Image (cartoon, rainbow, N blue to C red; front, side, top):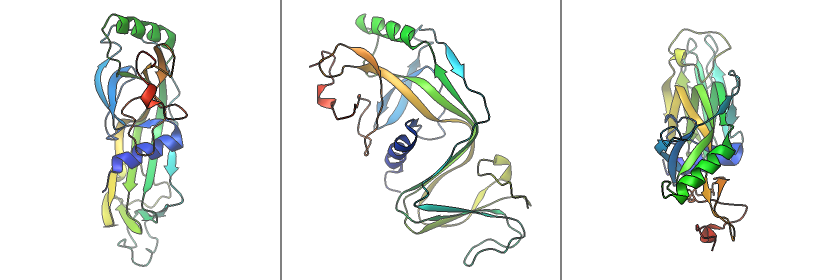
Length: 256
């Protein structure tokens, strides 16, 4: 697969306005501190370790996200006892899922029972970070995770093969119509595949989406804290602030 991470990171940010975790099974915590390189966050420390207190709120559990790039992928559920489609590797007694990928780049992203956590004392954190920076105790490239989606389970499939197909078989004798891609108890396994896909099937307890904030120096302004936001289509921001237009050439600590 040709650069699946770049496509996935840019695409998910464009659709959700969150940063996507790479690799998707990596687990983050609210208040983690790291550096972004090619859109990938690597953790160095945390607010707790830096002696900065955090306050956070947690949304109610039970939320789910189901995103599919519908223009380029079709998902069908195969139930036990149903006659398989022509050309399928399923037998009548099998259950599972089939995917047809029409475009060169496709994503399936599903979570179950997820929860949003976010920091709520950002003003206090901003003051502490600026104080540490002025004392030489803060790396200007560090970013802080301020929002985090925690999912009990998630399935993520990334394809870059036009006219690709994938069939996932349930390793249990299940005939119900309530099959879920995120259900680890189904024991989903690959029955047939044509093309190239990267698969994270029914991964438990992961943090697939997050937001960060960090030091920025917008054009002709003083040093401040800002959200490290938009990811460019080829994910080359390297952790620098990208505003509505590209100001990377101006983003130094002196505002020059």
